[in-house]
Image 1 (spheres, rainbow, N blue to C red):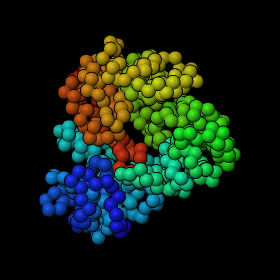
Image 2: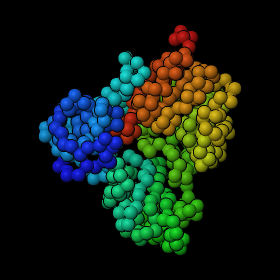
Image 3: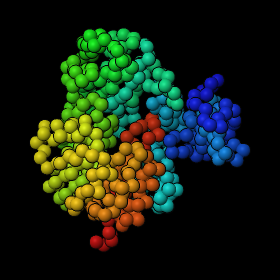
Image 4: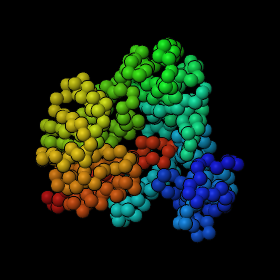
Amino acid sequence: MESTEPTGPLGEGGSDELVELSLDGIAQGGDGVGRHEGVVVFARGGLPGERVRVRLFERRPSYSRGEVIAVLEAAPERVAPRTAADNAPWQHIDYAAQLRFKETIVRDQLAKLAGLREPPLAPILAAPREWGYRNAARLHVDGAAVGYYAAGSRAVVDIDADPLLLPVLNEALAGLRAVLAPGLIRGVTLRASAAYGYAVAALDPHPGAPPAALEILAAAWRARVPGLAGVVVEGAADGASLIHDELGGVVFALSPQSFFQVNADQAARMLAIVREQVAPGAERLLDLYSGAGTFALPLAADASEVTAVEEHPAAVADGERSAALNDIVNVRFVQAPAERALPELEDAFDAAVLDPPRRGCHPAVLGALARLAPPHLAYISCHPGILARDLGPLLAGGYRLELVQPVDLFPQTPHIETLVILRHGDPAG
Protein backbone atom coordinates (compact mmCIF):
# COMPACT_ATOMS: atom_id res chain seq x y z
CA MET A 1 0.00 0.00 0.00
CA GLU A 2 3.07 2.24 -0.25
CA SER A 3 2.70 5.48 -2.19
CA THR A 4 4.91 8.47 -2.83
CA GLU A 5 2.38 11.09 -3.92
CA PRO A 6 -0.69 12.53 -2.18
CA THR A 7 -3.92 11.40 -3.82
CA GLY A 8 -6.05 14.37 -2.84
CA PRO A 9 -5.75 18.12 -3.36
CA LEU A 10 -4.11 20.29 -0.76
CA GLY A 11 -6.67 22.28 1.18
CA GLU A 12 -6.17 25.76 2.55
CA GLY A 13 -3.46 25.31 5.11
CA GLY A 14 -2.58 22.03 3.39
CA SER A 15 0.47 19.88 4.03
CA ASP A 16 2.30 16.90 2.59
CA GLU A 17 3.65 15.90 6.00
CA LEU A 18 3.93 12.19 6.91
CA VAL A 19 2.60 11.06 10.29
CA GLU A 20 2.18 7.72 12.04
CA LEU A 21 -0.83 7.10 14.23
CA SER A 22 -3.26 4.53 15.57
CA LEU A 23 -6.86 4.55 14.37
CA ASP A 24 -9.72 3.91 16.79
CA GLY A 25 -12.86 4.98 14.93
CA ILE A 26 -14.67 5.30 11.61
CA ALA A 27 -16.15 8.56 10.32
CA GLN A 28 -19.14 9.29 8.18
CA GLY A 29 -17.70 9.24 4.69
CA GLY A 30 -15.63 6.15 5.47
CA ASP A 31 -12.31 7.49 6.76
CA GLY A 32 -10.51 5.93 9.69
CA VAL A 33 -10.17 8.28 12.68
CA GLY A 34 -7.21 8.78 14.97
CA ARG A 35 -5.25 11.55 16.68
CA HIS A 36 -1.82 13.04 16.13
CA GLU A 37 -0.46 15.53 18.61
CA GLY A 38 -3.96 15.99 20.01
CA VAL A 39 -5.55 16.79 16.64
CA VAL A 40 -8.14 14.54 15.00
CA VAL A 41 -6.92 12.95 11.77
CA PHE A 42 -9.28 11.51 9.15
CA ALA A 43 -7.30 8.85 7.31
CA ARG A 44 -8.67 7.74 3.94
CA GLY A 45 -8.18 3.99 3.52
CA GLY A 46 -7.65 3.25 7.21
CA LEU A 47 -9.58 1.03 9.63
CA PRO A 48 -10.17 1.10 13.39
CA GLY A 49 -7.53 -0.95 15.18
CA GLU A 50 -4.76 -0.19 12.68
CA ARG A 51 -1.40 1.51 12.99
CA VAL A 52 -0.81 3.48 9.80
CA ARG A 53 1.42 5.97 8.07
CA VAL A 54 -0.58 8.86 6.62
CA ARG A 55 0.32 11.59 4.16
CA LEU A 56 -1.64 14.69 5.17
CA PHE A 57 -3.16 16.69 2.33
CA GLU A 58 -5.25 19.07 4.45
CA ARG A 59 -4.44 20.54 7.83
CA ARG A 60 -6.77 22.71 9.91
CA PRO A 61 -6.56 23.90 13.53
CA SER A 62 -9.08 21.29 14.72
CA TYR A 63 -8.51 18.40 12.31
CA SER A 64 -6.38 17.05 9.47
CA ARG A 65 -7.15 14.85 6.47
CA GLY A 66 -4.83 12.46 4.77
CA GLU A 67 -4.32 9.25 2.80
CA VAL A 68 -2.99 6.02 4.27
CA ILE A 69 0.21 5.21 2.37
CA ALA A 70 1.34 2.29 4.55
CA VAL A 71 -0.41 -0.09 6.94
CA LEU A 72 2.02 -0.82 9.76
CA GLU A 73 -0.34 -3.02 11.77
CA ALA A 74 -3.41 -4.27 9.91
CA ALA A 75 -6.87 -4.81 11.39
CA PRO A 76 -8.30 -8.32 11.02
CA GLU A 77 -11.14 -6.89 8.90
CA ARG A 78 -8.74 -5.80 6.13
CA VAL A 79 -8.99 -7.81 2.89
CA ALA A 80 -7.35 -7.60 -0.54
CA PRO A 81 -9.01 -5.09 -2.93
CA ARG A 82 -10.42 -6.27 -6.26
CA THR A 83 -10.20 -3.15 -8.43
CA ALA A 84 -8.00 -0.09 -8.86
CA ALA A 85 -11.00 2.20 -9.38
CA ASP A 86 -11.93 4.64 -6.64
CA ASN A 87 -15.66 3.92 -6.88
CA ALA A 88 -15.28 1.05 -4.37
CA PRO A 89 -13.46 2.82 -1.52
CA TRP A 90 -14.42 0.21 1.09
CA GLN A 91 -13.39 -2.85 -0.91
CA HIS A 92 -10.47 -3.35 1.50
CA ILE A 93 -12.94 -4.09 4.33
CA ASP A 94 -14.53 -7.47 5.01
CA TYR A 95 -18.25 -7.23 4.21
CA ALA A 96 -19.45 -8.15 7.69
CA ALA A 97 -17.29 -5.32 9.06
CA GLN A 98 -18.67 -2.90 6.46
CA LEU A 99 -22.14 -3.58 7.84
CA ARG A 100 -21.01 -3.06 11.45
CA PHE A 101 -19.32 0.21 10.58
CA LYS A 102 -22.39 1.51 8.75
CA GLU A 103 -24.64 0.74 11.72
CA THR A 104 -22.16 2.52 13.98
CA ILE A 105 -22.10 5.60 11.74
CA VAL A 106 -25.91 5.86 11.71
CA ARG A 107 -26.10 5.45 15.48
CA ASP A 108 -23.33 8.02 16.08
CA GLN A 109 -24.85 10.63 13.76
CA LEU A 110 -28.31 10.32 15.33
CA ALA A 111 -26.80 10.71 18.79
CA LYS A 112 -24.49 13.58 17.89
CA LEU A 113 -26.75 15.65 15.63
CA ALA A 114 -30.29 14.72 16.71
CA GLY A 115 -29.70 13.94 20.39
CA LEU A 116 -31.16 10.45 19.97
CA ARG A 117 -29.21 8.28 22.38
CA GLU A 118 -31.41 5.19 22.03
CA PRO A 119 -33.07 5.37 18.61
CA PRO A 120 -35.22 2.43 17.41
CA LEU A 121 -32.34 1.22 15.25
CA ALA A 122 -32.91 -2.09 13.46
CA PRO A 123 -30.00 -4.24 12.25
CA ILE A 124 -28.80 -3.14 8.83
CA LEU A 125 -30.20 -5.09 5.88
CA ALA A 126 -27.25 -6.71 4.14
CA ALA A 127 -27.21 -6.76 0.35
CA PRO A 128 -27.92 -10.14 -1.28
CA ARG A 129 -25.02 -9.41 -3.64
CA GLU A 130 -21.82 -7.84 -2.33
CA TRP A 131 -20.58 -7.35 -5.92
CA GLY A 132 -22.27 -7.10 -9.31
CA TYR A 133 -25.33 -5.19 -8.10
CA ARG A 134 -25.22 -1.78 -9.80
CA ASN A 135 -27.60 -1.21 -12.71
CA ALA A 136 -26.14 2.15 -13.75
CA ALA A 137 -22.78 3.84 -14.25
CA ARG A 138 -21.45 7.17 -15.43
CA LEU A 139 -18.05 6.63 -17.09
CA HIS A 140 -15.59 9.29 -18.22
CA VAL A 141 -13.40 9.12 -21.31
CA ASP A 142 -9.97 10.69 -21.77
CA GLY A 143 -8.28 9.61 -24.97
CA ALA A 144 -8.19 5.82 -24.83
CA ALA A 145 -8.87 5.74 -21.07
CA VAL A 146 -12.40 4.80 -19.97
CA GLY A 147 -13.29 4.74 -16.30
CA TYR A 148 -14.01 6.84 -13.22
CA TYR A 149 -12.36 9.96 -11.87
CA ALA A 150 -9.66 9.36 -9.28
CA ALA A 151 -10.58 10.57 -5.81
CA GLY A 152 -10.21 14.34 -5.55
CA SER A 153 -9.24 14.88 -9.18
CA ARG A 154 -10.42 14.84 -12.79
CA ALA A 155 -7.88 12.20 -13.82
CA VAL A 156 -9.62 9.21 -15.40
CA VAL A 157 -8.66 5.85 -13.90
CA ASP A 158 -8.75 3.42 -16.84
CA ILE A 159 -10.62 0.18 -16.07
CA ASP A 160 -11.26 -2.99 -18.05
CA ALA A 161 -14.28 -3.88 -15.91
CA ASP A 162 -16.06 -2.78 -12.75
CA PRO A 163 -16.95 -5.61 -10.36
CA LEU A 164 -19.77 -3.50 -8.88
CA LEU A 165 -21.72 -3.52 -12.15
CA LEU A 166 -24.27 -5.97 -13.50
CA PRO A 167 -22.61 -8.31 -16.05
CA VAL A 168 -24.31 -6.77 -19.07
CA LEU A 169 -22.80 -3.39 -18.23
CA ASN A 170 -19.30 -4.85 -18.12
CA GLU A 171 -20.00 -6.44 -21.49
CA ALA A 172 -21.01 -3.01 -22.79
CA LEU A 173 -17.87 -1.45 -21.31
CA ALA A 174 -15.65 -4.04 -23.01
CA GLY A 175 -17.44 -3.45 -26.31
CA LEU A 176 -17.00 0.31 -26.05
CA ARG A 177 -13.28 -0.02 -25.42
CA ALA A 178 -12.99 -2.16 -28.56
CA VAL A 179 -14.64 0.36 -30.92
CA LEU A 180 -13.85 3.71 -29.30
CA ALA A 181 -12.15 6.31 -31.48
CA PRO A 182 -10.23 9.02 -29.53
CA GLY A 183 -11.70 12.50 -29.48
CA LEU A 184 -15.34 11.58 -30.09
CA ILE A 185 -16.83 11.34 -26.61
CA ARG A 186 -15.97 12.60 -23.15
CA GLY A 187 -18.28 10.28 -21.26
CA VAL A 188 -21.05 7.72 -21.38
CA THR A 189 -24.00 6.80 -19.16
CA LEU A 190 -24.84 3.10 -18.95
CA ARG A 191 -28.17 1.80 -17.63
CA ALA A 192 -29.14 -1.86 -17.34
CA SER A 193 -32.49 -3.53 -16.75
CA ALA A 194 -32.10 -5.83 -13.75
CA ALA A 195 -35.42 -7.45 -14.66
CA TYR A 196 -34.80 -8.07 -18.35
CA GLY A 197 -31.00 -8.24 -18.60
CA TYR A 198 -30.22 -5.72 -21.34
CA ALA A 199 -28.61 -2.27 -21.41
CA VAL A 200 -29.05 1.15 -23.01
CA ALA A 201 -26.34 3.83 -23.23
CA ALA A 202 -26.22 7.60 -23.73
CA LEU A 203 -23.09 9.20 -25.21
CA ASP A 204 -21.73 12.57 -24.10
CA PRO A 205 -19.95 13.80 -27.25
CA HIS A 206 -17.02 16.16 -27.39
CA PRO A 207 -18.10 19.57 -28.70
CA GLY A 208 -17.71 19.52 -32.45
CA ALA A 209 -17.57 15.72 -32.76
CA PRO A 210 -18.83 14.82 -36.27
CA PRO A 211 -22.39 13.44 -36.07
CA ALA A 212 -21.63 10.82 -38.72
CA ALA A 213 -18.68 9.50 -36.69
CA LEU A 214 -20.85 9.28 -33.58
CA GLU A 215 -23.48 7.32 -35.51
CA ILE A 216 -20.81 4.92 -36.76
CA LEU A 217 -19.52 4.48 -33.20
CA ALA A 218 -23.03 3.75 -31.88
CA ALA A 219 -23.76 1.19 -34.60
CA ALA A 220 -20.40 -0.56 -34.20
CA TRP A 221 -20.85 -0.70 -30.44
CA ARG A 222 -24.31 -2.23 -30.68
CA ALA A 223 -23.14 -4.76 -33.26
CA ARG A 224 -20.41 -5.91 -30.88
CA VAL A 225 -22.58 -6.23 -27.72
CA PRO A 226 -25.79 -8.30 -28.09
CA GLY A 227 -27.12 -7.06 -24.75
CA LEU A 228 -26.82 -3.39 -25.74
CA ALA A 229 -30.31 -2.58 -26.99
CA GLY A 230 -29.73 1.07 -27.86
CA VAL A 231 -27.33 4.01 -27.88
CA VAL A 232 -28.65 7.55 -27.50
CA VAL A 233 -26.62 10.32 -29.15
CA GLU A 234 -27.78 13.92 -28.71
CA GLY A 235 -31.44 12.98 -28.52
CA ALA A 236 -31.41 10.47 -31.37
CA ALA A 237 -31.17 6.74 -30.77
CA ASP A 238 -29.57 3.83 -32.56
CA GLY A 239 -32.01 1.17 -31.34
CA ALA A 240 -33.90 1.58 -28.07
CA SER A 241 -33.94 4.96 -26.33
CA LEU A 242 -35.56 3.72 -23.11
CA ILE A 243 -34.82 1.04 -20.55
CA HIS A 244 -37.64 -1.01 -19.01
CA ASP A 245 -37.25 -2.31 -15.48
CA GLU A 246 -39.54 -3.57 -12.73
CA LEU A 247 -40.10 -2.59 -9.13
CA GLY A 248 -43.03 -3.51 -6.91
CA GLY A 249 -45.06 -4.98 -9.74
CA VAL A 250 -44.69 -1.87 -11.92
CA VAL A 251 -42.81 -1.75 -15.24
CA PHE A 252 -40.85 1.49 -15.48
CA ALA A 253 -39.91 3.07 -18.82
CA LEU A 254 -36.82 5.19 -18.16
CA SER A 255 -34.45 7.33 -20.16
CA PRO A 256 -30.81 6.30 -19.60
CA GLN A 257 -29.91 9.39 -17.55
CA SER A 258 -32.96 9.25 -15.24
CA PHE A 259 -32.43 8.58 -11.56
CA PHE A 260 -33.58 5.15 -10.44
CA GLN A 261 -32.37 3.09 -7.51
CA VAL A 262 -29.11 1.43 -8.62
CA ASN A 263 -29.58 -1.70 -6.48
CA ALA A 264 -32.83 -3.37 -7.52
CA ASP A 265 -32.79 -6.03 -4.78
CA GLN A 266 -32.46 -3.52 -1.97
CA ALA A 267 -34.87 -1.03 -3.54
CA ALA A 268 -37.52 -3.75 -3.49
CA ARG A 269 -36.87 -4.36 0.20
CA MET A 270 -37.21 -0.67 1.03
CA LEU A 271 -40.44 -0.47 -0.93
CA ALA A 272 -41.78 -3.48 0.99
CA ILE A 273 -41.04 -1.76 4.32
CA VAL A 274 -42.74 1.46 3.22
CA ARG A 275 -45.73 -0.51 1.94
CA GLU A 276 -46.03 -2.38 5.25
CA GLN A 277 -45.40 0.54 7.60
CA VAL A 278 -46.97 3.51 5.82
CA ALA A 279 -49.31 2.45 3.01
CA PRO A 280 -52.03 0.49 4.88
CA GLY A 281 -55.06 2.72 5.27
CA ALA A 282 -53.44 5.63 3.40
CA GLU A 283 -56.17 6.77 1.04
CA ARG A 284 -54.29 9.94 0.08
CA LEU A 285 -50.54 9.57 -0.29
CA LEU A 286 -47.91 12.27 -0.86
CA ASP A 287 -44.55 11.40 -2.48
CA LEU A 288 -41.97 14.20 -2.30
CA TYR A 289 -38.83 14.17 -4.44
CA SER A 290 -40.57 11.40 -6.34
CA GLY A 291 -38.20 11.08 -9.28
CA ALA A 292 -39.79 8.87 -11.91
CA GLY A 293 -42.27 7.54 -9.35
CA THR A 294 -40.09 4.90 -7.70
CA PHE A 295 -42.41 4.80 -4.69
CA ALA A 296 -45.48 6.64 -6.02
CA LEU A 297 -46.32 4.21 -8.81
CA PRO A 298 -46.02 0.90 -6.87
CA LEU A 299 -47.85 2.41 -3.87
CA ALA A 300 -50.71 3.60 -6.07
CA ALA A 301 -52.24 0.13 -5.74
CA ASP A 302 -52.63 0.76 -1.98
CA ALA A 303 -54.11 4.29 -2.18
CA SER A 304 -57.00 6.13 -3.75
CA GLU A 305 -54.89 9.13 -4.77
CA VAL A 306 -51.15 9.77 -4.95
CA THR A 307 -49.58 13.19 -5.43
CA ALA A 308 -45.97 12.93 -6.65
CA VAL A 309 -43.83 16.08 -6.49
CA GLU A 310 -40.64 16.23 -8.60
CA GLU A 311 -38.77 19.21 -10.03
CA HIS A 312 -36.93 17.58 -12.97
CA PRO A 313 -39.01 17.53 -16.19
CA ALA A 314 -37.31 14.40 -17.58
CA ALA A 315 -38.10 12.43 -14.42
CA VAL A 316 -41.73 13.58 -14.50
CA ALA A 317 -41.95 12.55 -18.16
CA ASP A 318 -40.61 9.10 -17.28
CA GLY A 319 -43.06 8.81 -14.40
CA GLU A 320 -46.06 9.77 -16.50
CA ARG A 321 -44.92 7.43 -19.28
CA SER A 322 -44.58 4.57 -16.79
CA ALA A 323 -47.99 5.31 -15.27
CA ALA A 324 -49.61 5.11 -18.70
CA LEU A 325 -47.73 1.90 -19.51
CA ASN A 326 -49.20 0.27 -16.38
CA ASP A 327 -52.67 1.82 -16.63
CA ILE A 328 -52.13 3.66 -13.35
CA VAL A 329 -54.59 6.56 -13.30
CA ASN A 330 -54.56 7.65 -9.64
CA VAL A 331 -51.09 9.27 -9.57
CA ARG A 332 -50.80 13.01 -10.22
CA PHE A 333 -47.30 14.36 -10.93
CA VAL A 334 -46.56 17.94 -9.91
CA GLN A 335 -43.47 19.31 -11.62
CA ALA A 336 -41.96 21.79 -9.16
CA PRO A 337 -39.36 21.96 -6.40
CA ALA A 338 -40.79 20.39 -3.26
CA GLU A 339 -40.20 23.58 -1.26
CA ARG A 340 -42.35 25.54 -3.71
CA ALA A 341 -45.11 22.99 -4.30
CA LEU A 342 -45.69 21.71 -0.79
CA PRO A 343 -46.64 24.98 0.95
CA GLU A 344 -49.33 25.45 -1.71
CA LEU A 345 -50.92 22.06 -1.11
CA GLU A 346 -54.01 22.18 1.07
CA ASP A 347 -54.90 18.50 0.79
CA ALA A 348 -55.12 16.31 3.86
CA PHE A 349 -52.71 13.42 3.32
CA ASP A 350 -52.81 10.17 5.26
CA ALA A 351 -49.14 9.43 4.62
CA ALA A 352 -46.06 10.92 2.99
CA VAL A 353 -42.88 9.48 1.53
CA LEU A 354 -39.74 11.62 1.27
CA ASP A 355 -36.71 10.55 -0.77
CA PRO A 356 -34.69 13.76 -1.07
CA PRO A 357 -31.28 14.16 -2.71
CA ARG A 358 -28.12 14.03 -0.65
CA ARG A 359 -28.56 17.61 0.58
CA GLY A 360 -31.80 16.60 2.35
CA CYS A 361 -35.03 18.54 2.68
CA HIS A 362 -35.40 22.28 2.26
CA PRO A 363 -36.46 23.91 5.57
CA ALA A 364 -39.71 25.02 3.89
CA VAL A 365 -40.54 21.37 3.21
CA LEU A 366 -40.08 20.43 6.84
CA GLY A 367 -42.20 23.40 7.94
CA ALA A 368 -44.99 22.55 5.51
CA LEU A 369 -44.99 18.91 6.64
CA ALA A 370 -45.41 20.08 10.23
CA ARG A 371 -48.45 22.08 9.04
CA LEU A 372 -50.00 19.31 6.94
CA ALA A 373 -49.08 16.70 9.59
CA PRO A 374 -49.73 13.48 7.65
CA PRO A 375 -50.08 10.77 10.33
CA HIS A 376 -47.53 8.44 8.73
CA LEU A 377 -44.19 9.47 7.30
CA ALA A 378 -41.36 7.56 5.61
CA TYR A 379 -38.05 9.34 5.02
CA ILE A 380 -35.39 7.69 2.85
CA SER A 381 -31.95 9.26 3.28
CA CYS A 382 -28.55 8.65 1.70
CA HIS A 383 -26.67 10.74 4.30
CA PRO A 384 -27.00 9.92 8.03
CA GLY A 385 -25.83 13.37 9.12
CA ILE A 386 -28.37 15.17 6.95
CA LEU A 387 -31.05 12.75 8.11
CA ALA A 388 -30.24 13.57 11.73
CA ARG A 389 -30.42 17.28 10.94
CA ASP A 390 -33.83 16.97 9.26
CA LEU A 391 -35.28 14.81 12.02
CA GLY A 392 -34.97 17.72 14.46
CA PRO A 393 -37.80 19.87 13.03
CA LEU A 394 -39.97 16.80 12.41
CA LEU A 395 -39.64 15.57 15.99
CA ALA A 396 -40.22 19.10 17.29
CA GLY A 397 -43.32 19.29 15.08
CA GLY A 398 -45.05 16.39 16.78
CA TYR A 399 -43.62 13.34 15.06
CA ARG A 400 -42.16 10.40 16.95
CA LEU A 401 -39.55 8.05 15.56
CA GLU A 402 -40.72 4.44 15.29
CA LEU A 403 -38.09 2.77 13.11
CA VAL A 404 -34.58 3.49 11.87
CA GLN A 405 -33.70 0.90 9.24
CA PRO A 406 -30.26 1.11 7.60
CA VAL A 407 -30.18 -0.62 4.20
CA ASP A 408 -26.94 -1.46 2.43
CA LEU A 409 -27.64 -0.34 -1.12
CA PHE A 410 -23.97 0.28 -1.87
CA PRO A 411 -21.65 -2.54 -0.74
CA GLN A 412 -17.91 -1.81 -1.01
CA THR A 413 -18.58 1.90 -0.41
CA PRO A 414 -19.22 3.98 2.72
CA HIS A 415 -22.57 5.23 1.36
CA ILE A 416 -25.47 4.40 3.66
CA GLU A 417 -29.17 4.40 2.86
CA THR A 418 -31.44 4.77 5.89
CA LEU A 419 -35.21 4.43 5.97
CA VAL A 420 -37.00 5.97 8.94
CA ILE A 421 -40.66 5.66 9.88
CA LEU A 422 -42.34 8.41 11.88
CA ARG A 423 -45.84 8.76 13.33
CA HIS A 424 -47.59 11.99 14.23
CA GLY A 425 -49.45 12.52 17.45
CA ASP A 426 -49.83 10.65 20.71
CA PRO A 427 -48.85 6.92 20.64
CA ALA A 428 -52.26 6.04 21.99
CA GLY A 429 -53.92 7.95 19.17
